[in-house]
Length: 455
Image (cartoon, rainbow, N blue to C red; front, side, top):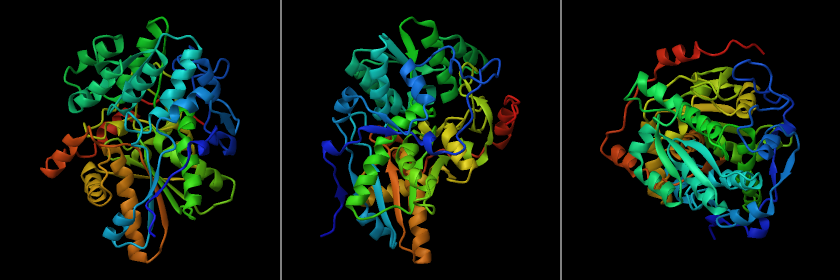
């Protein structure tokens, strides 16, 4: 019989997170201080904008870090997540390739984001905090943190990128239902937000701006610290439950991927799936494994950006990291994939790209919705615009197999559902998606403002 899904029991859930830094011969360099540009080692992130337990995880070189029992207990609300074999889509594409996808849309907020939100709230509660402040693009991270803070009795302040605040009202309602306080960014509540609004009252906002506001809010309100949904090592660490489960499920299927794929804005969901498999590549067990990180051409940090030191936020308040970046001041086109509008990329992913252990690819939103539509017609799942980028890459790899006759195994992360993104699908059906042009001059201008740090 044809098998469509592979399910694990709760007893099969990972008990430890996988830390890829332990297996990287050349890990990303240390962060730099946002003002002095000095290497930040002791303490590693002054002032400590994150709970200290998370800062310790950020710089840990331990290969396996134990998942607290209370965190595991909450993750069991939706984990282990299913792995699917896309038999119907394979047939529609007429490809000899085998396509699998890990489905993260089963969580209450509908994406992979709660995997780290729950962990971060656990450590915030352990530290005795009152609440967390954060930013969100499309709203998936803000939804996840609102969900998690509610479970731990914490307050949640969310600065939501203005264009997404307008495009995705149901995400805002979801956050508010779980007790989150949501404001459009840039806002009048912070110095950083007021400064941006003074320059451009009609700005669509950006993740860099929203991060600046959230950090400022956390640093100026007693009992609050900052929470981040992507980019940094401890977030990617928490997401590895995705790939660790997928490895067991691929064993159940009697298979192993030739290609692993994830969409990447800051890199959390793609790393969550790819990093446990990347361990096999780094250690030489699977040297031919291809890892593909897929971004939007609206904010092409990996494919058009510069591998250099840059601030993580527009106001230059956060640490400086070496990453692929289009510049902290770049404002991307207001595409529906709000989660892929961050100017930089996770430093660990960037190091892997620079050392040619991984590949990067960028797609226009018109291309990805073609693929998402094909996927929905055959697999039934309407995915988020961000996930559509991974689907487009999987589709192109499957069609390449059709052309070559190779029966490769493709695995991608379906990182969230698109139930609150139907306006994007409506625009697609009406041939009304924003047909933006790559803003090369704006990218060059933004990259000209990078700090001049060598090495």
